[in-house]
Image 1 (cartoon, helix red, strand yellow):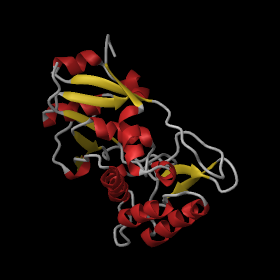
Image 2 (tube, rainbow, N blue to C red):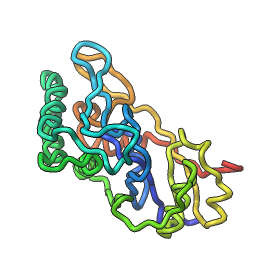
Image 3 (cartoon, rainbow, N blue to C red):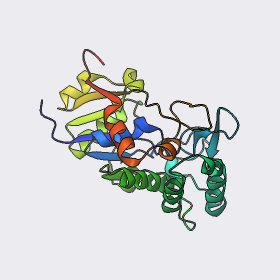
Image 4 (tube, one colour):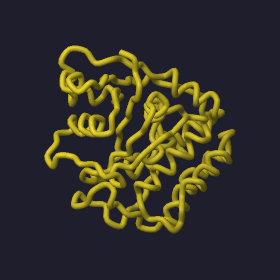
Length: 246
C-alpha cells in the first residue's frame, strides 16, 4: 500500500526524548492530542536532564491548576517568567563542558513566551523550535483548536482511528510501546495503514558526566551538532507495519 498521508497523534510533551522527534520526522502531519484528562507527573510538563553531580534530575514546569479535574488543553503555567528562569537554572551546569550550551539556551528563549500561560502552546513551541533547529518538517494542528466531531466515549486506542478517519489520513504511526491498544483490523477496514515505531538507543559522549540514556532532547542537543541529531532521529528508529490482530 502506497502511503499518501500519514498522521502522528500524541499528547504534548515538554522537550521530549529523541524518539518523539523520530515520529515527527516520519509523518506528514502531527496532531497535538490535548483533549483528554490531564495527568500530573508525566512528560506533559516535565522531562529528565543530567544532574550536576550524578545521574539525572527532572526539569519541570509548575502549573497553576495541575490536577486530574482538567483537560490537558486547560493546563496553565503558574508563572511563565519564573518557569523559564528555573529551566535555564537547571541547565546552567552544562555550560562548563557542553559545546552546544548556547544553542540550547537560544531554543529555550524561542520556546518561552512570558505572556502566555498555556502549557500546551509552550510544549508545541518547544517542538517547533527543535524541529526548526534540526531541519525537520513539523506540520501540526492542535486538537482542541479544531472542530472535531468525535464520539463521547472512546477507548485509548480508538482516538487515533476516529481522528484519522475524520481528517482523511490513510496512514497512522504510533510508538510501539502502545501497540496493545490498537486493532489493525479496525484501521484496515477504514483504509488506514497502521504502523509502529520502535526507537533504538542513540548514545553520545557527555564530557565530565556519566552518560544517561533516553533523556530529554535538551540533553542530546547540548552534546551533538544539529546535523548529527537530525540523522539520529531518522536512523535510530525501526518502523514496522502492524500485522495480525494488532
